[in-house]
Image (tube, rainbow, N blue to C red):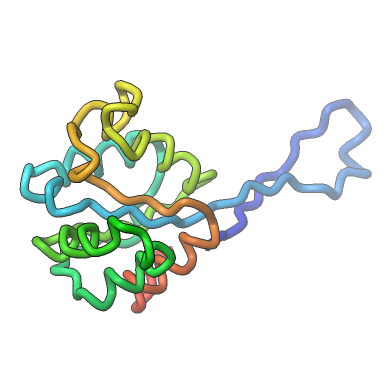
Length: 164
């Protein structure tokens, strides 16, 4: 979900300000981050949240939940025919997870970069998975792949909405 923030453009030369009526727009996006049961059980909620905030992004929704099977299956519906679907759903319902709505400039891409490659063995050091995860089965987090996925996933995990 996107929200526009207005920043005025500074004049670049004297005498130009009277004709200046253009503003620069920066788009705030909101994306979803899930901290999976392994991250919760390893007490990594604070570390992952710290990294998100240190990047300059805002937490606009945060809750600890025991995910319902139906919610997880809807979340991963596009993978229903994939061989890993059942295992992923079993894992996400095996313990509490943290649902986080994260807002800021380029939030979707920034979060994806911060989390690192899906397989922690391929993740760059400095990313959440590169620093904290060891296996693809417990790669600690999920983050929305794009704006469309973020919008769909936020409605699923935050039906009550988020703070602006």
